[in-house]
Image (tube, rainbow, N blue to C red; front, side):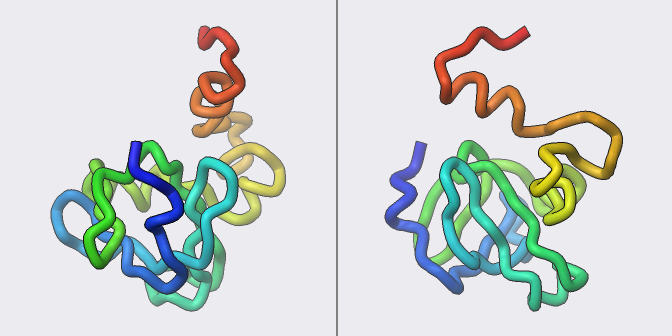
Length: 105
């Protein structure tokens, strides 16, 4: 995993395809919080796991393409509730389980 301290506020985040995903607001625990004023954000903060970061080289480069990142990022509302889109599915539960040393089912 990439050193999270290398990720700075206002860095661009790009997918593995080189396409824009968002702009870093800050790093929170094991996630990157993206700014809500970016055109891609639709006025909401979105969260992506640090496990998606492939490299930090002037920009945060993800191991997933931009389309996948946007379809799987966690919205601000979902982040606060701990679920994505009200479906009851928490896309980051596995990451939290691993980080806590728990067994993933």
